[in-house]
Length: 252
Image (cartoon, rainbow, N blue to C red):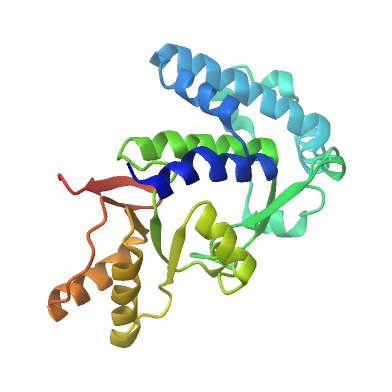
C-alpha cells in the first residue's frame, strides 16, 4: 500500500474539499445514477432540467427576461427539445455588452467562483458560477476519470498552456496545500524550446506522476523531443487530452 496516497485520498483531500465547500458526495451519487439511466430516461431528465433552467433564467436573470420578452417568448413555450431552437443564441458580443445583467438576481447573496473562457479563439470572457455547479463539475470529472483509472489521490502532471488555470505555485502556502492534497505538477507549455523541454523531463522524472494530462499540440511537440533526444522519461500510468475522451493507459 502507498501510505502517502492512502492518507491524501482518505484524510487530507476529503478534509480540504469539505473546508472549501467542495465535498461532492451527493453530486457523485447523482452522476452515477444518471449513467445507469436508459436513453429514454436520460432524455426525459434532460428536458425537465432544460425547462427548469429556462424558467429560472426568465425569472432571475435580467438579460434573458428582457431579451425573451422582446421576442414574445415565455418559459411555458419550451415544451420539447425542438422548442429549444426558439431561444436566441448567446454570442460573445452579447456577453461582453451585458455582463452585469447576465448575473442572477440571487447572485449577490452567494459566494461565486470566477472563471472564464480559455481565449483560444478570442480574448477571454469572465464567467461566474456557484459552488453547487462547481461540486457537480467535480463529480462529473471524478466519474469520467474513473474510466481510465485516474484515482482522486493520483499524482498528476499537467502540460498546460492556459495561464489562468495554473495556480501561483511559488508560494509556501500553495506548496504545503498541494503536497498534502492534490499533489499536482504544472508544466507551462505556451513556450517550449529544447532547454525548457529538457527541464520538463527532469521535473517529470523527479515527480513521477501517475497521470499526464495536456493539450494535443504541446503533448505532440514534447513527445517528438523525447523521441529525438533519446531521453528516458518516467512513464505515467495514463495520459489524456482535455475536452476529448481520448485517454491511454500503459496497457494500451
